[in-house]
Image 1 (tube, rainbow, N blue to C red):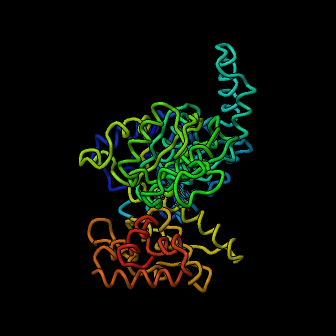
Image 2: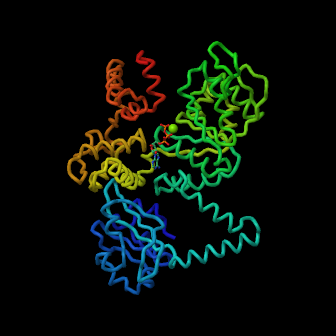
Image 3: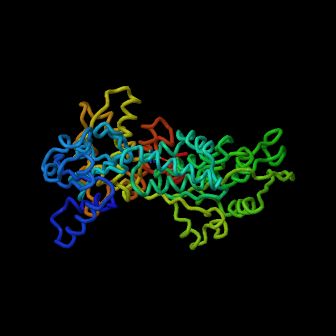
Length: 473
Ligand SMILES: Nc1ncnc2c1ncn2[C@@H]1O[C@H](COP(=O)(O)OP(=O)(O)OP(=O)(O)O)[C@@H](O)[C@H]1O
Ligand SMILES: [Mg+2]
């Protein structure tokens, strides 16, 4: 097997390595079960292994040096070197046979240098054979029946499928999500703002046994301390001045048979942390002012963009609660750590946004993609989606090039130039300037706080705090 990782890092397409490494690579390539072909920037074949040669009956020496589109039927590799978008597990008809292929762009220091094509199975019939063997095996052990498998495939339109990304990190997270969704384990989703924590929380709900019930979200960062308890547990009539007649159910009660999503759990006041811990341990709670015990019958998923471990060390987050909610952790890496997902996310947002505004689909140049791949994205996918939306609206023609991108994105490179994204600018500005920027963002978004936070590339909770700080609420 050839590791895509090495290929993605351009190790094959780079300068000539020493003889020893070349030999090893040659052996790996030619003993691989998969057909492997590598093309350069212009779609010209530079590597072609024995498996590929056998499959399409073209000699290696006849393939190397020729445009890939002339050698392999229905290939898309000459487009992969233009779009930078990786495709995994797609069907391609080669010599009339449906084949499963991967197409992986090769990036080197932010520049697209080529692409690798891999034929994964010897035709999709191989897949069916594997599937049949799997069915036979599971029928024997009685662990899964085929009916259940069909049921499982039915939920394929879950939120999980809307999470875009072909990086190993995303593939692993999706795999873990599918696994943990079926269990009762409390899951903690961690990751910077805008990395997709809420999408993963929804995915767990969609794929769990609680999917028929509601998905109730609690933003722990947006609830004033004194209202927290009644928000979460509800209250009985007459519990306090201003309490509604007949009382009110809390979020935990509303989530019965469904999922309770405790978002921004790091913002939960200490008093509430203690109360929540009790509920998670005893699976029972009471409304404020009530005595009747209510069973907790909801799946609990929590999320945080703070480092809870550090908060435990500094004494601001209860250690016992941390271990209680962190049975399984889904840690979503920031976008800058999985920049190979950027091209496909760009393609996805381009299509989405052009559809939303009913415009003809715009194209994006390789240079622009390269700049976007080198930007640090502290606002992660939310920031990327916002930038693409802005650029789509502001670009007159049909092609988006790097000069259409905001100045702070153009030409920025990972380590050399410090990030100038709005989130960082805000950090550096003095208080008055910060206030001004926030007022402007609120004006621009018609007073909508979520939109204003998006514009600023900061999280809503951070915006709430800043509004409070500047007396703007
Ligand atoms: N992998 C992805 N594919 C497609 N869209 C994504 C992906 N990840 C995030 N998004 C989109 O980015 C935005 C932010 O995602 P989400 O709200 O799930 O992030 P979050 O981690 O909960 O952010 P926050 O910490 O700010 O609450 C949403 O509009 C979501 O649809
Ligand atoms: Mg969120």
